[in-house]
Image (cartoon, rainbow, N blue to C red; front, top):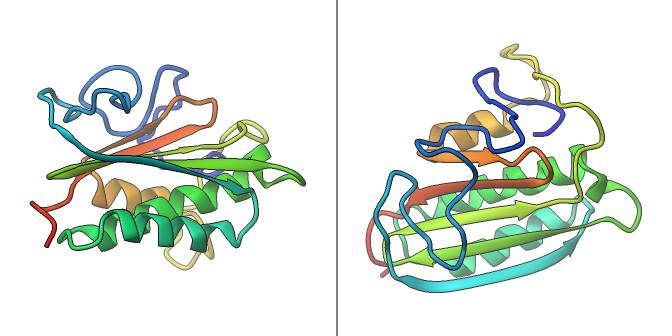
Length: 168
């Protein structure tokens, strides 16, 4: 969340989150495991959505279809949902007329998901870690499920995760 971040997250312009490389995510044209190595692209797709709460459902459906049959499909859908919800709540995409884009690059064994919003509404702030808080758990979930994730600090949020092998 741009307005609510995990304390370990670094919002440097060149990247943040948990990433064993410097900079942002592997590019869609050459997806690689964040720690090195390459994997053949099975599919690369994108969807543009309005910056409204209902777009989270559309992003979930888009992702679920793209990763159907993989053991970790539900985890990927949840992470995309969290990033889209954050884009709507904490970026200029959530303002009237705003939009966001969800991009998925899927290999035989992993997914690189990117959510591109229209930039932060303000300076990101750390969320309450209170157990009973109503909000502030989105990036905590992403961090728990995705071995690598981050942000460029300007509206691109991403994660990479293994999908658990070939889809069925």
